[in-house]
Image (tube, rainbow over all chains, first blue to last red; front, side):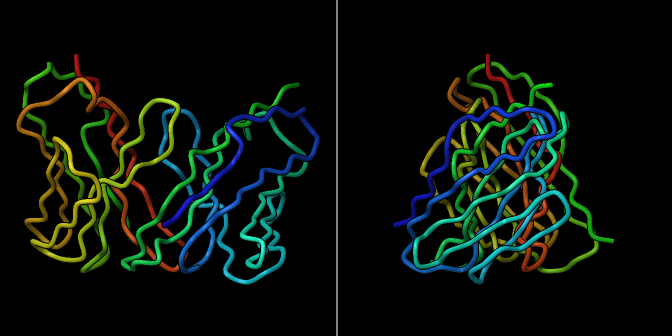
Length: 111
Length: 111
């Protein structure tokens, strides 16, 4: 089966750095996605990792370790607009690119 | 360009009434399409997916059904809504190797 776990809530201060962790258990691995979802809105794509290592995109970076079944999203120079839920997701190994989502981590950025 | 449209944005329906939510995709052909539901404060739950006209796979047996009458049209329906059907419904298509593109969502409240 598939299982994706991430913390429910996190808080951080504006200008700081925060790391959101995600652990996954899948019978086959086809990559790991991170999405951002502001309250009341649809999720938007942030990053995709299929190989081990760190992928950097401006203030956001994503890391993957396939041997450990672990990923994290790193947000630097936090801004108030980064307050949102961050969803970790992985394609179901059964095919058809069915994405299985974690429950999401709600990040609150305070001044 | 490729876009996904979903309507209505919000809906309040009485228990026992029917439901029809529509999703259309533009700028692509033969997309994989998905319906997700997100209960308040929860993660995304995959309800249905479709790989072509008339092809529907159900992930969770429940009070809902889906249809794909045209290549770029995906419809979520119910004959009689339950209170537990309340939630944020999202249509998505498998836009690339970078996961999904989501519609703007429909917030359904069953009263």
